[in-house]
Length: 336
Ligand code: HEC
Ligand code: HEC
Ligand code: HEC
Ligand code: HEC
Ligand code: HEC
Image: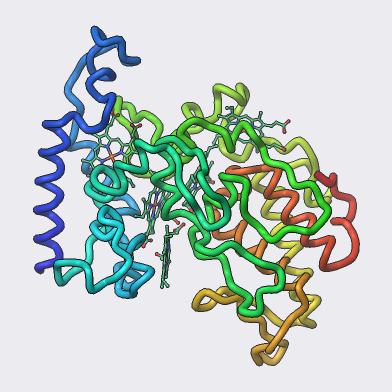
């Protein structure tokens, strides 16, 4: 009860604030053609429609349980994020809140959008425009090391590791490449995920849902995000959609790990990758190549874009971990 009332109140106050201030440094310019902004028609922004989108979004409907721990709360509670609080005890209320308007449009959120740069565990001072905001939370939380005895797992939010081109467990001596056109988009995540809605404002569903707006200026013929791949990266004899190729590579890598564990399994569990043998007994240690393959598998699968965030790096991480584990390239595949 307290939780919900608090949330609704905050929401109303913030919506009013945003309406009054016009939200953001160049909002006035955008809405006023006389000021030389990009939009031709001046008109009131439909704040109700925008707020309704947020209310349906994953940032509104979040799992609050992870917020209950120090070190977790800063990304899992909108108010803590705005104030950059990493300790639960420092929060002056007895309930947790979702990733609400205040999280992104006040305090730390607003500062990150203005700065356009952010440090993430795998890289410092990453340029992301307004997307620097998203990168603060959507990263794997720790830079991986091949000889890490903890066998640390990437957090469920590994996107920025790939989008910035800095993530993944890499082979020494192999020259990894990024798809620069994707990595260097001015506002990174925001350019693809907050495209303009039919009502004319930045989408607040946060889901990727507009291929035309996000991709077509560079990929003219594109009809959906599963763009036809330039090569048969998984070696199954067909050049399929790029995301289908990445799915194929993920399956191959998972099978290779399972074979190496003689029918065992691996999974992300409380921040670690736990490896089990065929009987389900946890293994005390595994070779580095096995950790590398499992880590990169989890990194790419939890990223959720099936390679679109950084096509070149994604294919290379999967193909090279396969090679390190099995001693051979992915059979019949085009190696990137
Ligand atoms: C304060 C931290 C924080 C910030 C900033 C943030 N997010 Fe999130 N985001 C989350 C959390 C936490 C979840 C997961 C909610 C849940 O499921 O409990 C999430 C979920 C999502 C999802 C849904 C993922 C899925 O698996 O369905 C998308 C998409 C997303 N965020 C995109 C973005 C974008 C784009 C930005 C920048 C505009 C952004 N996020 C900024 C914390 C954040
Ligand atoms: C750097 C920011 C950050 C920190 C710190 C962080 N998380 Fe997360 N976490 C996220 C984001 C963002 C997501 C959403 C990922 C997605 O859906 O793509 C997430 C997702 C999760 C999920 C899955 C939620 C769901 O709806 O499926 C769990 C569970 C979780 N985190 C637990 C934790 C715990 C426990 C801690 C502390 C030990 C923690 N997180 C620390 C950013 C963070
Ligand atoms: C080049 C455009 C592009 C950029 C830049 C981009 N994304 Fe994505 N993102 C996508 C596409 C396409 C998908 C896959 C959507 C699908 O297959 O349904 C996706 C998927 C996701 C997902 C998984 C959603 C789900 O439902 O599981 C999350 C979370 C996400 N992106 C967050 C981010 C974050 C955070 C950033 C910035 C660090 C970012 N994206 C940058 C295009 C982009
Ligand atoms: C996860 C982060 C996030 C959350 C939560 C969020 N926004 Fe935004 N919002 C953004 C980003 C990013 C932009 C685009 C900023 C830019 O391009 O200057 C934006 C833009 C806007 C704009 C300008 C839209 C336009 O097209 O000019 C308004 C108004 C706005 N947000 C209101 C809200 C309100 C109200 C809420 C809560 C219901 C909210 N936002 C929640 C990230 C967020
Ligand atoms: C700013 C321009 C730009 C935008 C926007 C853009 N791309 Fe790309 N994309 C490129 C370039 C350039 C390449 C590299 C082409 C190459 O590897 O020869 C590329 C490569 C790719 C690849 C790899 C193809 C392969 O087989 O190697 C895929 C898949 C892809 N893009 C999908 C998308 C999707 C989906 C979107 C929208 C979510 C998108 N791109 C947005 C410019 C862009």
